Length: 161
Image (tube, rainbow, N blue to C red):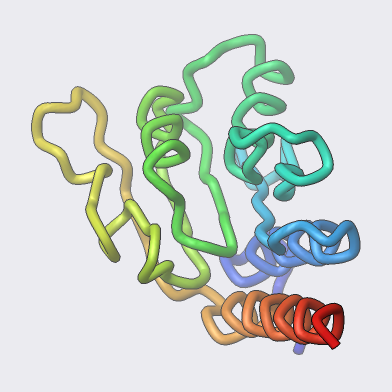
């Protein structure tokens, strides 16, 4: 299915492309893109396993790249598209970077910090609010994760034989 360039679905499709890059590296397939003024300014995907760095999540990579590109840590006028609901670390980084809007593909009932397990983004004491939209290409974002973990379990069970 084709989506109009610049639409929320189009940007999430771009984040999914990043997730597939992670998949190809045997990383948990989560992808993200940062958008400013209708253009992608940063792309990233999980690389925890590859780098042995537990902070190397898609969101963290994109925030770092966007800040470097813009020359500021303030991303107020930016939109972040991520295929899976952020964890607590990433939700905290999103607040710290002052990301304006967050678009989430699939929810994460085990570790999601934007409403599933906890909602870090709605803590009144924080001085920044992030506008959040859920469910963009939810089925596709969920499917890539299901397939990845299904294959991972299969590989692990084959090693036991």
